[in-house]
Image (tube, rainbow, N blue to C red; front, side, top):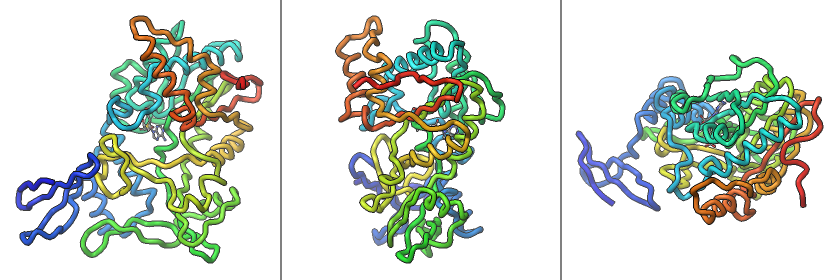
Amino acid sequence: MSIIVQGSYIALIVRYSNVEFLYQVDSGGGVVNRIETPLGSIIRDYILAHGPITFREFMAQALFHPELGFYSKGPDIGSIGGTFNTNAMFPAFAFGLARAVEQAEAMVGEPLRIVEFGAGTGELGARILSFLSHPHEYVVVEASHGLRRKQEALGLKVFENVEALGPAPSFVFGNEVVDAFPVHRVMGDGRGNLLEMYVAVDQRGCFTEEFGELSTPQLSSRLASERVGLGRGHIAEVCLDIDPFIHGAASIISKGYLVIIDYGESSSALYHYTRKNGSLRCYYQQEQVHDPFDHIGDQDITTDVDFTALEAAACSAGLGAARRVWQGPWLENLGIRQFQPPGVDPKDVNAQIEQLTHPARLGSTFDVLLWNTSTISNAPGFPIKT
Ligand SMILES: C[S@@+](CC[C@H](N)C(=O)[O-])C[C@H]1O[C@@H](n2cnc3c(N)ncnc32)[C@H](O)[C@@H]1O
């Protein structure tokens, strides 16, 4: 713990599990308020002027506010050294995806445009291109302007949304993209109804949660379509952004594949009563933390993906049923063990492959959902050999 004098106030920095929390204290030593980030102040002032906002609106601002949102600032996502490993930090993962593209082209019988949604720093895309035996058109669709700059600096062609792209034979994919979509939060009231969580500001100026009527009937329709009922106090996240995203992705594939790699569950598991607090969590300086009202704009916020909603959206977009498998067996099937980069210690290469494929590591953390257009019957990495 340390104390600093900053301008006109005294601040207390409390360090807990490697994460710093900043509090404003009064002259008697009492905690007055948690000190907000500039984005926290902007959102608080907005709520004071206009009233409570849905959690979805709050999360969209926290992640994608044009200047101060976590992603808009262009963070170094997936950098080595943190507590958590992500796929994109391992070159072997890019090798696996390059193999998937090559197999997809062999199956379709013609070159495919590669489209990556939500490319983070762009390193994964640059690596995939380096592992392909001939040049490809590689297009990124990226919501964050800060990350778009990083991706462009690596030579990638980048667009803000799919509208600039026409349909073409394509291999379209997104790694850990859907888990970053803003979500509504709802709660069962014990009488068979749903309430929605709004973000409000209390009398002390602190963020607080309030429950009220649903902001849109789509929330109850979604859960009803998945035959999900929430008991009293059961909180669940609902991501309505999935539908326009999948429809947009499907619209640019005249022939080819859509591959989504992410953590999540089918709705029956995601919304099971044993998960009655939902799956929302935050990451600050490589540590998992739980309060979305801390470090607003400086921390990532994420939820588990509703795979049932993804599959329903793909079905209505004309893509049909998904093939779905854990990432580990898919990468094994694609031939990830042939990854032998020159000048790298084989032990390090093997460690990367184990991280990505072992069921106790990322091999089962991530699922692969793959759709093909109706003109093709086979798919890269499938069928899975047992
Ligand atoms: C968790 S990061 C993953 C980044 C990268 N794919 C990786 O694996 O390291 C989520 C990425 O998706 C982007 N993103 C979120 N929503 C998006 C959307 N609707 N369209 C395109 N990109 C989006 C974010 O800006 C960010 O680049």
